[in-house]
Image (tube, rainbow, N blue to C red; front, side, top):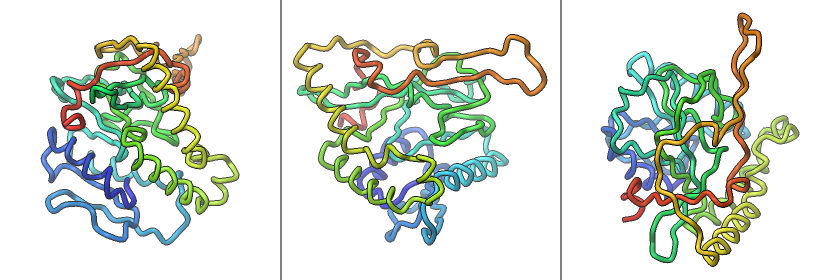
Length: 267
């Protein structure tokens, strides 16, 4: 779902059009004043005449995804700043009902290489054969992750000035959020976006000075990202419990080289 993403939406489409035909891409547009979706790509327009609601957004995306699965074998859901690399992967070889991605907060170094800091909180079940039991933020599923084979570049911090301006806009949107959700603390991170932005870039600057150690991306053990609990005595209706191990701030030394996986961003 996007709203007035005049910068991030073209980046999003440039990336995903490497893998999918335009007629198989659906952009859910939540009330943009101008149609930013190019001809050939599907636009599902939702009016913006009520306070924004993350609960309504989640339910809408679940419903739309479920409807589309009547006509498609599988689906991929991603926000405008979430770019999944499918290079070298046959999507139809994926066996799980829901496949989790390996999420990275990405940035450019002084050599214009795309680097990523691992973020368990961005390891989401975004590729699916049936709609996952997502909760707010799309972080959960009823399926246990087997391996994290697909890297996902979270570009929210990547374009310094544009990202900062975007976060300022989200802070304004947060002030109009559905009041019940606001009282519950839903999407509170939107109000703290600038602080997170500065904390991330301060950490990156310090790591660069200390000559960070870079890893090459390879399929990752899900236990690096999640705490997974299995009920001892499985009863009808019992499910496993999957919890991300925090955000990038607890993975401060896990830097990865990602340029080869996202050539469209680097170029």
